[in-house]
Image 1 (cartoon, rainbow, N blue to C red):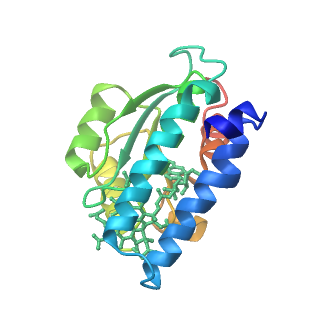
Image 2 (cartoon, rainbow, N blue to C red):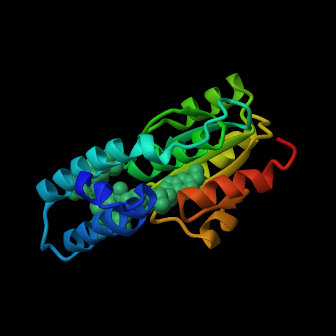
Length: 189
Ligand code: B1M
């Protein structure tokens, strides 16, 4: 990565054209049993180290906490957080007030945090077909608690149709799109 940067490649191009396609390829190799869990874990560690190196270059115009308040979490049962962390970084970059609850987060913890921080947005991430079902429980719990926060979804397993079906307010397939989605939902902020 350092060589690519010194050769003049942009950090965002390295992320979007190399790192993300590479980790997706690892996922494909895992699916067809060319790679196994150790390779999946090593690749995830490598990806994290890469994102850490690029992060200062990806952050450009942090206007610190001026925008909407966003609670972010990877839902219960799911420990994938690379994509959610990219969403958090991009949102902070646009001045959103991001409270990142981490991964494998209980529905109750998400609802409590949204109430405590008067969240404008609850952003949920899930990477597995099993755990994306948990998103529905969060939406139901938010509704039961009378929360007015808008709920947006993302993560490799999630689709726009699924988001509509379970009553989410929006879906984005990537981190930049998530920022645009929040801006569209909160035009006054
Ligand atoms: Co796992 N894993 N994994 N894994 N892993 C997947 C998801 C899988 C598809 C691989 C495969 O089989 N091809 C598969 C799920 C299958 C399914 O459900 N259909 C899988 C599996 C099975 C598992 C385990 C069960 C393996 C095992 O233990 N036998 C286990 C899960 C344990 C658990 O969660 N309970 C497991 C574990 C792991 C690691 C820990 C090794 C590691 C994660 C490390 C980490 O996240 N800290 C890992 C990895 C790296 C992957 C793959 C290869 C890559 C995921 C990733 O980081 N992608 C993945 C394969 C794949 O997705 N193709 C796979 C890059 C990242 C930038 O993309 O997260 O999609 P993504 O985020 C994008 C967008 O989706 C979007 O923006 C991001 C940036 O563009 N986005 C949002 C994400 N969240 C958003 C929220 C938004 C908006 C947009 O609004 C709020």
